[in-house]
Length: 300
Image 1 (cartoon, rainbow, N blue to C red):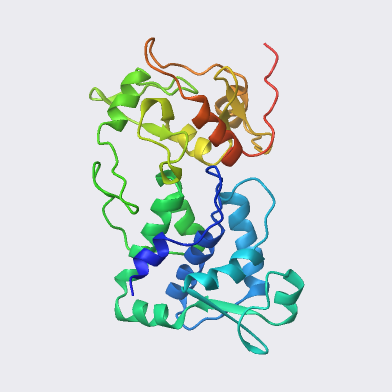
Image 2 (tube, rainbow, N blue to C red):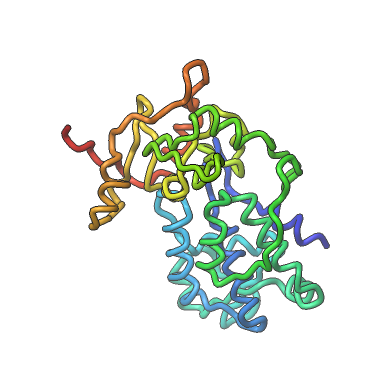
């Protein structure tokens, strides 16, 4: 049985690029718990709060419930649910899951495979991360679920990733050149020994969700603003102006200067003659990543 293929092909609700990371988040959480205690069964009453927090931080902004992946992940052959009455899930009703003493854990065959080959856990985790989340969030997610995927070299540019697509090795250089080696949000342009430092090519529509390796789906961002862009704190509005989420709270002068004050500011770049971010990709990010309503730009 190919467990990596199962991890790569989790059955998910999908329409028009809408993110539904519920099952991947639960499976990552379960792998982390298995790594901590291979025999531990996970009561729904305990998983509910943890998974709700993961969905709030790493899922889309729309309301959702941890009950759905807890029940439906069984259909992918990697998860089992038991209640006080025996094997099987009582369904997606929160009351029923709580009242029946429902517990879940990795499927028996998968647990045996992980014991035989400890490296499988890290490979499954990396498959889930690569297929569902941008690289800037991978370590944060591992920390959030208590998972050590046994660090492995990142796939080389141009190498095939899960799903068969190939990354464009020229992507970073093309994007940084298009934006003249400065952050599109704040203008940061640091270099050391003539090499850019702290500048990254950020996908607007995530590569894991069909976003192409192309300049019209990317921004040159500093490391801070890349992370905030992928977490939905920052976005792009009409007229290619910076959006700042109302959910962001920063009380220090640094937070106000580096984040809050960006609201409504026009993006820097790209160079004349180079296509800016396509509306299709910008709209995807606004709907699937950006959190809540944007702040009003401060009066000039």
